[in-house]
Image (tube, rainbow, N blue to C red; front, side):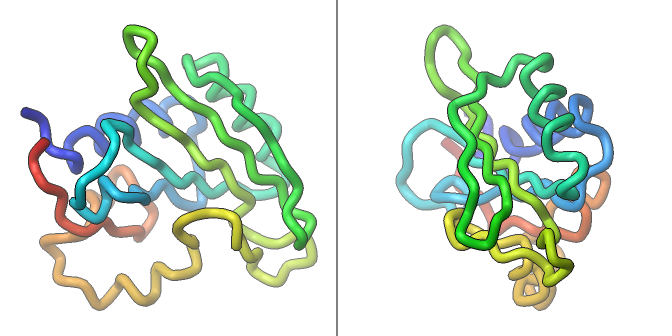
Length: 146
């Protein structure tokens, strides 16, 4: 079976090909932690506020279905998209603004993982970090084979 980390790396590559430059592409949720979970990879993608709408359109053209967009209490957009394979949801993308509209760094309290917590993860051993070619300094905990 393919590991969660390998599935994330594949999805991150697809997302990167759709969107191009992002602030971060991170593996989040239960599969990132290697705990019992649904067979769905959750991915957090951070983009600048100016790039949010274009990123939604690019991901939609790349095969991701728009589920919904909401405005957070901080005034930032948070969009959920998913990718289906054989009518089964295999990936959920949380597209968030990686910097606040007022330049405060943006708080994404609605997401399960916050891009700003990367500094905490920088102390993790290199063996648990994502390949730099697919992320922008983000990291992922070890994944169990599934």
